[in-house]
Image (cartoon, rainbow, N blue to C red):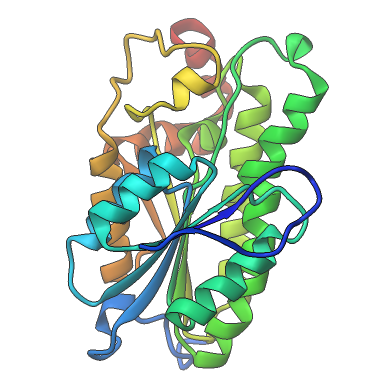
Length: 284
């Protein structure tokens, strides 16, 4: 079913729109290996793009009870129908929306075993031309909404001694991209949060995966207001990212790059930042 939660800024009550440390410490187990019970996965940004592809990938497997959320109730309903999922249409930047989503998910599907935080928005252009309200929007959606939701779901995972948080980052957050200063900063924050949180959760049985995709063929570029015009890297289908997410969940991996060769520029930047900056300035 689809639960709607949207603007205005005051938070309404629920409205159902349509049914439908040391080496001795235990390491996080792959979510897929936790017995035979049905596991609950919550996917944000599931109305399109990477989030929708992840939902469909998990929906192809037995043993997942899916709850999907996104800001477009029509598209979200389509994805939910395709995956036999429960949908909660919401703008997670609104006050209280994260709590309502958490309560709804727990009430309808039980404790969350897997969170895939796929909600994101971008903006391209010179920083001096960027409207101040858009700066807020990019950080609210990519960073703050995700952190607030993780904060609500994490205690249950830690108490259960099991679970995984998957954060969808971006190559822009790892190497920085011209004309995407704020988006790069937001995704860099996501990556740093993933690393820091992973250190804190060591020994709890809860894992954190940071997924670093490059250019993905989704409506993201249309919505940011500027199409993708670079000749390289070439866009990859969102299904490739969804496969990487599924593999990371099954294997309990901490960080994955999509495609995998993107590790190279990240390593060059880390080992020789001056050289990387000169190359990036010359070749883009």
